[in-house]
Image 1: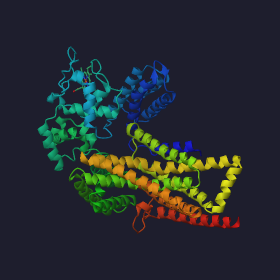
Image 2: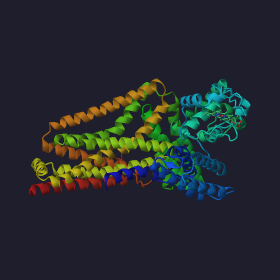
Image 3: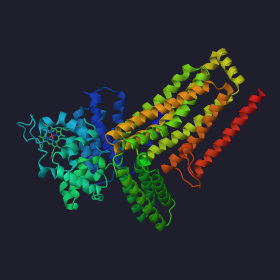
Length: 639
Ligand code: HEC
């Protein structure tokens, strides 16, 4: 397999890892979003400006057609299928952008109503972004204060909406506003802001909703929310954006105030940013309901989700406040997961559920007590970067030392290509995952698991190769051969270069997402000084890693050649065993591999997790390594 194929394989594993759990409606909406935002950029007046992007549009539209076709039949299903078919035709004909966009939006709106799809932002919108977008795009008509009296409003019929009109605003959900902003109002001067991203339109919708806020009510709502009110009515963003203030008023005594607060501070709600633990609690509640209804597969999937998409993200913040509670909560969630998975008796599952919920609630109180203090932000941040980066830097430094030591500094570019490529590809994958295709926690773990196992394989190979040269005499022979026969030399050189780049790539790529996610969660828990502390922690951690790499390279220069090769191949072998254990654990967390617990403590840093599968693979690797080492030694004796 060549390097490019491998890049692609790793990259594709993420979006295609597993089909999204609910029917594909959300994916279809996203693809349509993508079509309507990007098509006008790449096709103009029947001319394709970017062939590759255009091919993607063609592919997306046909996937939309297939997926819509497979949706359950309903009152308007045939209509929707026809529209999807028409969209494929328009794109194939490179039709005018406005027709394509209009049709994609219409199909989107049709799907939302027909299948009652609840659309919610993926993350809590950033209020500052909403205010800024509003000032530059909307104020001219709707007025700087939202009163509908902007300079361009004069003479418009109908007049731009006055967003401070409380009576009107109480009948509007944020989702309704979002839809109007996305689709415009035909027959009026209100344009569709289809060119904006999904996140921008949500930010605007929240900003528009805030004009009718009553500050006293928002404060009241905040107090109620902190006292635990409204949690049932608003378990997540989806409810906060679809319920209107009027509806909230009739659903509970202070729910309208809570809704006002949540609309003003959506980050109080989000699974991924604000309060991962609330997300865990609600996913666990769904899970136990599934258990009671006898749907064990669903229950298990939800239990995995509760862990990966909620709790795991709160870990760094919790670790810096109460490590004990962190361990207890983690354990309780695992016990519940395993009980569901093993189909334990109902009483046992219920008991495990209660313990997990208790622990999560304690953890939530610990986290909510205050915004993350600067000290905790710094500590959490430095722990994340050291934990996620340590293994990668060890591997990179060992390889760099090898190149320096053998006078092959010029090959260092392969090493750099590998890790830089991993960071770039990581960033791209991240961008894709937050705009086009949502990556679930399970898919993230699958990617991490697969890359870890691949790394283990490549490290093993490179380690053996190094070891086979650990005899100084053999190494000088190898260099002489290289000098002598240029023909044989290039082939060998290419293979070694590929190995180096691959090792560097895999060691870094597997950590990128998780690191970004952890930082996102930490960032959301902090404010002001806490956020600066997070940045300092990150910088300090990176410096620490660099110093460590420098030390390893420096020290190794003074080692005798044979000892150096022995030591670095040992280091690589150990890393291979560590990666193998972590890879198995990640796949188990994602629910892709069975888990048979063994009874001893876990040491995650060393990839040691107490289960049969992981330990088994690690033992097998150790046998291979020791056996290989012995064979190489026997061979070098003979020569
Ligand atoms: C050219 C003038 C103009 C601009 C610019 C404009 N709007 Fe509007 N908007 C209108 C008009 C006119 C209406 C009223 C349509 C109607 O009465 O059906 C409206 C209605 C709306 C509504 C519906 C409100 C409701 O309660 O139904 C929303 C939401 C909205 N605009 C948001 C925005 C946002 C956000 C922006 C900027 C991104 C924006 N508008 C920019 C003219 C404009």
